[in-house]
Image 1: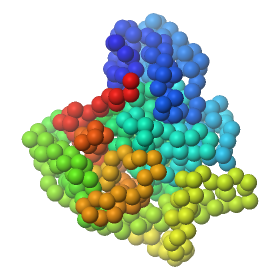
Image 2: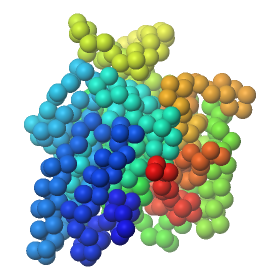
Image 3: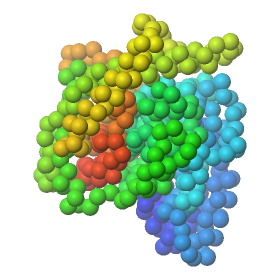
Image 4: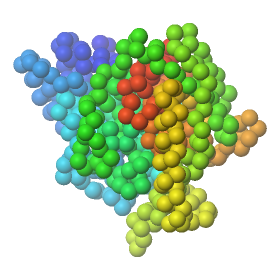
Length: 473
């Protein structure tokens, strides 16, 4: 293995088991790469090199002793800075939590460590996770490894940048409106937004409570679908601290080749309201054609009610989120970051959400969800875009596509639907723009059917070639 920081997590784990490379060598390679490249990316908010090397020494001793090793033994991972890690800052990009140190690990972090993972550090996010690009007053701006003048997305932008650049073998993000999937798309990696409750959101800030429990989840991010699946298997499982948690059995490995081809797949490349770039359309249609040639039954299918679902999502994420933010900053000397001020201004320009409107939205959301689940009974997996555009320049806020002006939040609608409706959805790198920027495809399933989503995502990865290495050096 010439460069231990670039193979997949599964390959690194296999090499460690074969004793052809040591956990210490792996961690040293990753720390060296972080030292060299993170100044350009600014992906990390906290790095614990000393702790990682000590953990690597213990992992190496365990390998030499023989016996059973966890599925992530010796693997260097990262975690978004909104998730508790004992003794490390968990600030969610806001000065309101500057210096906040959790006393214990979030359950998903405990599970990763128990499986043998070595946590290298925490990654950057916009203030209180309320933006599709990553910048804040505590740690500054994170850059995309494909083009430093562009964003890696948000809110899991630091995580996506670190993984794409080979500064982490994989990690954990969170997603309330595309915050795993948009950064995965912008940065050219894989990401999974699970069904709410499938992976415990316990220990995440802001907490997934009340209306936010409907839309907010945590999930794995990685360079390959196989790595994403392994992380999901480790992280998933019931936890009493998650209000949506259910006693669902641990996930099994993805379906076999013959079983996958029995899955009927629907697809669409435009919702009729928000156009996409021509490069994105070409990638989606090429993936559809390649899957058909590979033996899949795939047909056009656009779920009904998507625009209404987006409006209901905005009631929760936008209006309810704004109310909570105003409470947090009320009487506080700290000012919101520019990105957060921008979000608050968008909400303030609209009529306020009434109590009756929120109640009606909650009920209508359930009706739309039931209807979608019914429509997906025969077509349980969907393929569609992740976003109207690829990674945009820092601060960019609108685009002209097909002669129509597309605004910032509207461009992200392709992910927002599935937060309010509760569907699991994965992103797989599937192609690139004429400039070489990554384009991902979104794979969506029925609630609690992550295994089907992962299986189809793996098929997409196979026909598309998967992760490509950014030209950073």
